[in-house]
Amino acid sequence: MGCSKPPAQDKTSVQKALVDYLAGRSGISVDSMDIEVTSVTFRGNEADAQVTFKAKGSTDASNLMQMKYVLEQKDGKWTVKGRSGMSDHGGPGQAAPGQAAPQGGMPAMPPGHPPTTPDSAEKAGEKK
Image (cartoon, rainbow, N blue to C red; front, side):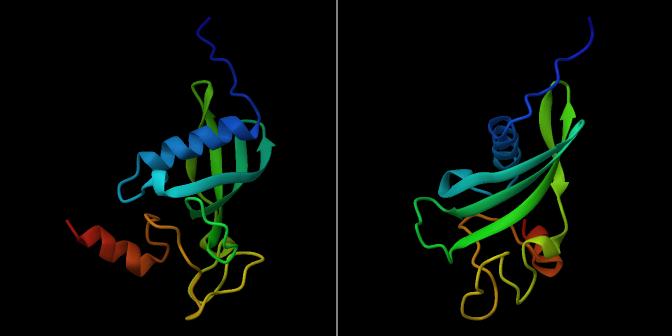
């Protein structure tokens, strides 16, 4: 009575929450990306998810990016709180974990992915 059922603690429910979160953000086309939750660690009402992004249908392992997200339980479902540390998926001149950086030193981003550096995020926000 008044209590909400806790969300399922599985990759599928976390994947759905993540895709819903990304679909609601401007400048991101989830239809152009393959998004895979590769691992999840549950901690009570929070979860840490390792997520791999790549261009839809791509088989090129050098064209992927990995990011960590933190989720929390809200109203019986998982919701994304945000990303976990920029250094976890490579900053300027760094590759995603386990990946070689492409020519130019920057990791390749899937089409439609938002800017990942503070400077480019501010510039993107300035465009209206």
